[in-house]
Length: 154
Image 1 (spheres, rainbow, N blue to C red):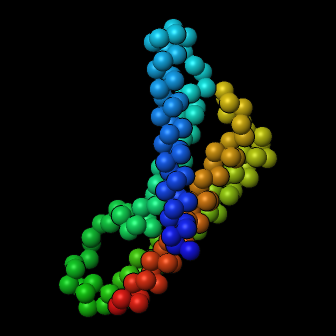
Image 2: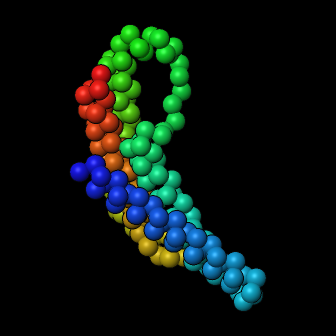
């Protein structure tokens, strides 16, 4: 299952980067070669960057490449690694569920009810914000899976 999620997420990130690249290249061509700047490419590049950043954060969590700040000395962690890995995993999951999944779903629902649309593309902003709960669910999945793998090792 993990490999399937990794492969899907890798391919999704590649597609998002390609979409962003094409939007930026078209913006440059339309502005400097054609003399008439495209109006929709700015929104596509912006929304692609949002999706790339959040799905990239989920992917980094799965590869355990996420940002870590060492506040506790390593020799203290070495005395009780199961506790500290569980402690960190617990708070990552709580943050992902409360802020990203629940908060993201509330944001999607609110923008859907208020019928907010993007200025140029006229797509519902709920679709743009849907990346929050989706990436939050991926972070929860990766955190659980990584913790289970660490328990087997420890």
